[in-house]
Length: 215
Image (cartoon, rainbow, N blue to C red; front, top):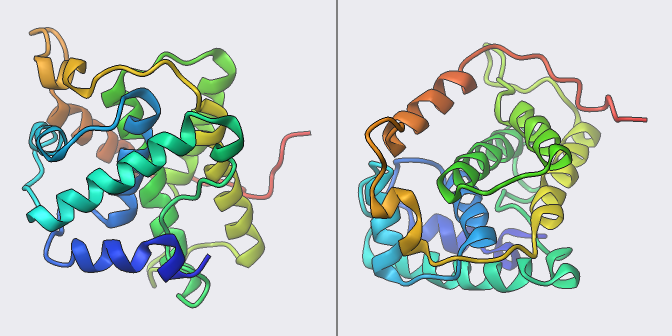
């Protein structure tokens, strides 16, 4: 899907002055939250971003997050519509390394969102998320290139795309009821600490054979 149809250009423009995380990572975070929660408004997204220690983007950007959040929530609550879902990554007019990086970012954002949403997973679902974490942990070489070709990228993209599809159709809750909004108990990690811990995991070297499909 090209950048206009996917919304990538809209996100790029709306978040052009906001650099806390990439738009792909933010889209992954939003997607996970919209699997577990009802759509929210500008105030709701502002609260989530604030609790994650992000600076707030401008009102236009948050409004775009509201609108796309509604679309993703609607799609992921229906199994048939869910199959049309796609991670927000640049199209094939962009360099392969740029697309690998965006997919890596999306996967990391999605996993962060699962934690924030406190989603309960089955053993099979946890295994899927564990495999997604391998995508989030892939690292470029010294020349900022990723060890993979177009076929490997497409395989990883399709795998990542299907994770929200397989986890969709959940019982939703209000975003205001999330612990990150209501307040965490003293013995639990803050959102900032969770994010730092995940970032540390991302920075650990990891070798992932993208084409090692399960039999």
